[in-house]
Image (cartoon, rainbow, N blue to C red; front, top):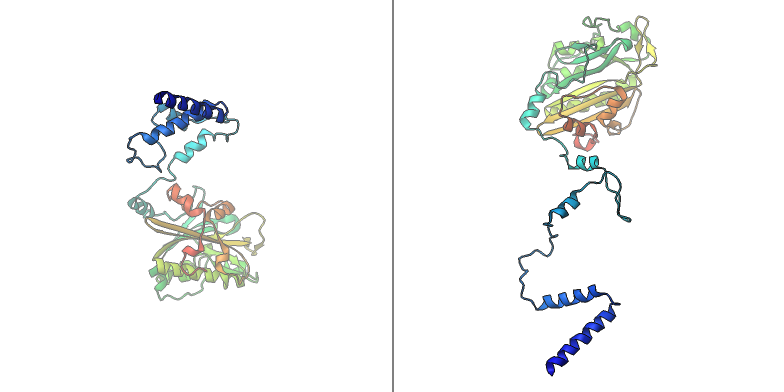
Length: 336
């Protein structure tokens, strides 16, 4: 009789649960499963309660990794992303390169030169290389390696500006600057080569000269040249590419030659000590300024877009993109 009473109690209790959950069987089943688990001796101590269960069914994996080329069929779910975007995210962010390989690239003779073509008029000096543009009677860029020992010599500048006999089309001459109101502004500064009389003298070839407003040449531009020399002293070696922003429609000076007067100048600096690589660029208007040098800092790729010049093309693409996409003044010594 007691067993019959217990059975009747269970039946009425089950009916009560069923009525409580509105005739739904699933909550009732879940309740009995929970009650059952409380009295079982199954040991789950080895399982991590914070770990998401790993699916074992291959169909679950297939569903998780499936990519829909169109939109999701779920009525309230977000649209699936295109397969190409997901595949791109799955690829490594960049291809790694060893320190030895990077050193090998940096050691190449023309590593620091911008991209050139067979039509470009290149002038190679002992201390620097430039690309001369006859149309504007000045270089598009001057590139060189600046090392600590170069700025510690005792050579003095002689201020003897000369036409460049190597430039086949001929260069501007000193007379083109007479009464123009513009300085004969160095692009590769004489003070960057104080350890060599020959190289310092070569910086006075007119192929290395561009018209600069006197207050600019002797002011903010000079300050920039000084801080680049400070970096060469601290870092032992930096790579420098500098030049005017050349474009059609610039005003000109000169009777013998029409020398374009740039409205802006740039300077791009690269430092490489594997695995560390960093770069910075400056873009300055050709006018006097009392602003901080840091206010003229721009990404290197913005100078590329402005001038059409491809800087440091021999760097691995992943490194080149990272270096040229940003310029951070705080990464550079004494730049405030």
